[in-house]
Amino acid sequence: MTLNEKIISDIHTLRNPVILSQIFEFVRLMKRHEAVQNTPSHTVRFPKYISDEEAEELQTIIKQEFNHTEGEW
Image 1 (tube, rainbow, N blue to C red):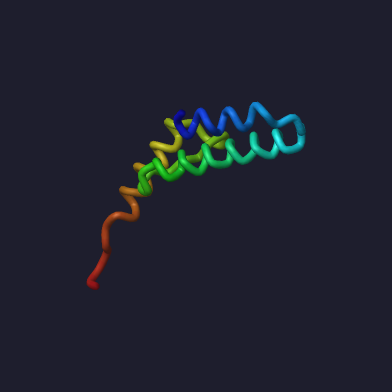
Image 2: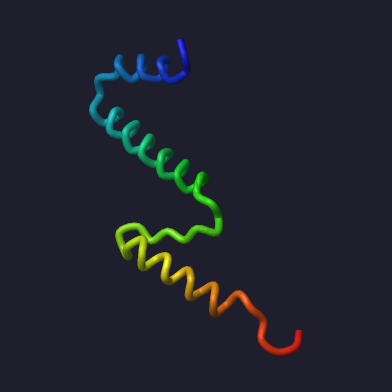
């Protein structure tokens, strides 16, 4: 039996809706955490705020304006 199957089997035995709700929220949190961990660090995400096209345009502007040094250093 795989770990996933063991977890699912254990969850099937639970009857308390509060505990099931907590498990559900925990799983959702872990899925979001995993998604963030798998996103390249240079990728900017603006979920629910701007479209992908707007985010790409913003990234392009930031790269153009801030990825160079002006003057002597």
